[in-house]
Amino acid sequence: MGMKHYPPEFKADAVALYRSRPGATIKSVAADLGVNTETLRNWIRAADGRRPGSHSAAGATATAPAGDSVEAELAAARKRIRELEEERDILRKAARYFGNGDALVNRFQFVADHQRRHGVKRLCTILGIARSSFYYWRKTAADRAARQAADAKLAVKIRVVHRESDGTYGVPRITAELRDGGEHVNHKRIARVMRQVGLAGVRLRRRHRTTVPDPAATKAPDRIGRDFTAEEVNTKYVGDITYLSVGGGKFCYLATVIDLASRRLAGWALADHMRTELVIDALTAAERCRGSLKGAIMHTDHGAQYTSRAFADACRRAGVLQSMSAVGSSADNAAAESFNATFKRETLQGRKGWPNERTARLDAFRWLHRYNTRRRHSRLGQRSPIAYETATTTTSTTLTEAA
Figure 1 (cartoon, rainbow, N blue to C red):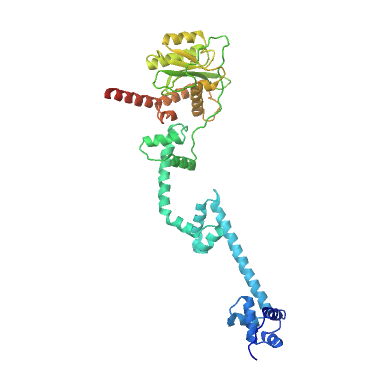
Figure 2: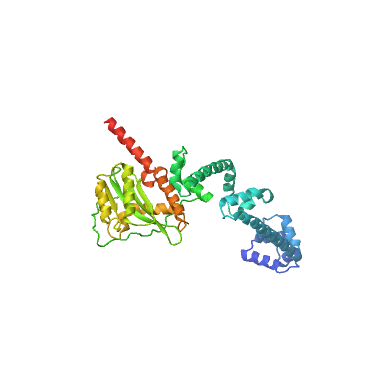
């Protein structure tokens, strides 16, 4: 019989006929259709996606009974089940690595610890990471270990500075402290290491108003107009009173006099009352500190102590010009308000008050002196008030000598 050309529909029907008769052989179906046995075999292979002439697979298909096909499918299903069970076990083990978060580095570490048993490729596929990323992570292990060691040393230094600040310093002041100590470090790195070791500065608390104005008192004009800056020290001051809760419903009161040029606490007084003597004592302390306050401006709120005749007389004797903020406006005495808030925030550190008056006085004494000598101020380039004054005086002297 010569070679015939069969249309695609005929070939498809021939293959379908063979598959519809489980007990039939290719030879018997080919005889029924009047085609060559090998021709029909090639059509079946083509329909199965196999190359013509692949005898081993074709023979197995042609001769394998239906039961063998079912067994093959069952074997494939069992294999897939084993693979899924293994993936489940791998993910359960990996979950232990993600206790502190599903960080990419935890996935890398899991692959590194289990690669000999399961293989890098399989583990990376299951965990959804690129093999190239894993190999890069492993390649840079030495550099990473060096950085971790350096961060650990830096953390020790950060803890020392944080502890010496009574736990009040945050990133900016700790950065400045370490840089002054010769440490070349970026503030972002300080922030990262502080987060890692669980350190933070003391945050701002809500302020409480203590000003009690006297409607009948004489008011002084506002001579600074919310300009809380000064070119030279001993020219502009702000004053205020804040309360200190000392337990049992009792209070102490702190009056301050702050230089707006250097933010130095020039004078302060602490007592268990809010009488006018309190603010006069603070002014007198500032006069002793500076030697003279003649010509300086003293800006306060409209509290009864500051509007009193006694305080006005004390200012005149000291040669001080009084200045007052608007009634009920804390923004007009913001520098003093900010100082009081900082004092309470860093001494109380979240507590509502002190257990007794003695403890409050000692804490205030320590912090107020430390404020002038050591505490870094953001408005002074992270220098303490006295350090700022010293640097300013040195610069002025040098310029004068040069001229």
